[in-house]
Image: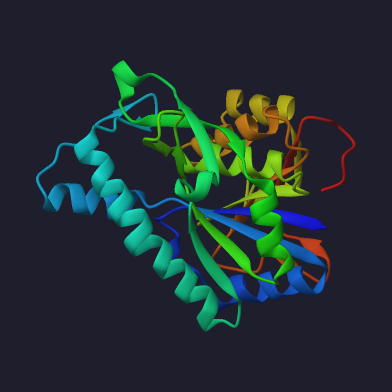
Length: 257
């Protein structure tokens, strides 16, 4: 079974182009099974502000008090997940929304309960459940929430959740959908980068601005043991005729994009 893990950030969700869904159809026609993980940062920020709850980040992770966690769960499960599932279904895909903390689908542990609160990282994935869903020709759409050993819900960074699930499911690739099609050098798309080459482009200030955190996230997931990680655009085709359009990252030179 050829599996692709596709991570969608909350900021790109409302800007997906029709060609994005055409690429998904091409992937399915090419024999790929799709798994989605999504974030919901903008919606969470909006709801926290509306409810006058302070929002704070530390080392890129949202500090999650029990009060903040209630909002995170409400938004991810009740709004963002439903929106993505509905969008996929409107475009002819059979999608099903799944909450990572349900039925021990995703299990995790605290990262730093004192400093970050209810924030965790994934320690195990119920691969059988996900595989069974895929074999029903359904597309699982997961929230990045995990269940701790004590039975509490943990807020997991969606990028890292995507990497953990991709690794556990032995996915062919982990794909990060953004508002750009990949790394550009002299206005030309860079198709493939090793970890070392990407870090050098950051040092040389070829990769700058908002692309830096995108690339660093991709590299972090590669270092977790994923063979290939891709940055692609949700605003234009990213897969067509068996060809990828984006930047592929790998820990090994010579790996095909």
